[in-house]
Image (cartoon, rainbow, N blue to C red; front, side, top):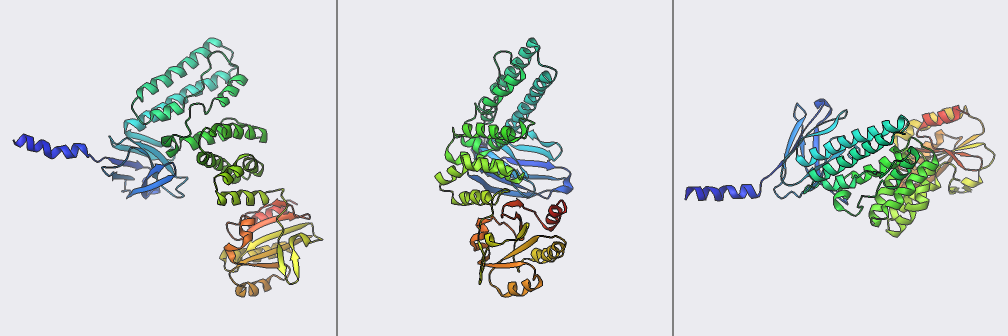
Length: 433
């Protein structure tokens, strides 16, 4: 009877066993907290956090009802740049070691260890393929041997992943395997054409992970050493065609990712190519008015575009397009309540006294005119204007202003020819003239 009673006591523990996510960050002095999120196709849900001990270690106990799937560890800010995925299958603990130099290595969790092992094995085979073509790539027997190894490796890991969540990762990552000898040009062409062949863009498990974004970014920015516009456009076109297999939301997500990256790299031509050919229409179709406005504003204020016209002053009326007689115009959006602006404007004032044939237009984004009217007295050589409503002023969206001060350099025809980040960037621009 005692044995039966004991069995009933341990049964709930077996049925509702709690598992842990633990890890060690090194060097320990560089990290403070680890945040755990449950990833979803729409974003991420906060689960818990833990403070790291003196050795850089932590442990979090998952709720007994924690769902299997993709989870994210965030270890620094900004969170979108300092995180990594892990797979939790609801059956085992997850333990890892992490450093910026080595990345993440899993000590416990068959799912994550298998995925990492797969990636490492495929890297070895891919390096062999690269070496083969680097040495001329003429030996057909060697070619067949290499790609037979690739095929066997893929098959072996798919079999090992049977019944595991990571099998979806492994199958989605299936590489192109030619059935007969191909020279480098042919192989490269077919590799690109088949890069996304095995990805289901509607699969929620894949969409919750970073696999899709990593795959798309790696294809556009890492597959070829060429960074000319034609190569980038060809890569973007392949991505845009591939993601059409998914719904509109995933199309927007992945194409916006590329748009943001080209924007960060200040590649205006490519950012606007994505917007004009794909993203702007998708934003309209999905009712994403915020993204639509961002795309339009960015294009209107890209290098080479004529600056949107607006009324600088009302009494008497003066529009930007009406300014005449100077070779350059420096347009500054600032605010009298912005401490950084109050430090930079005197420097701009002093520097512009050394630059000829240039006029400064200082447009204040203000809640009221009280402080602004006093501040502008310090800069009598500037053309001043005020936009009430501050961040609600329409020009904030028109010129895609995210912070003050924001600088634009215009030529005599009001075409945008530079967008300096700060006064030092302004000085650098005119120093090269």
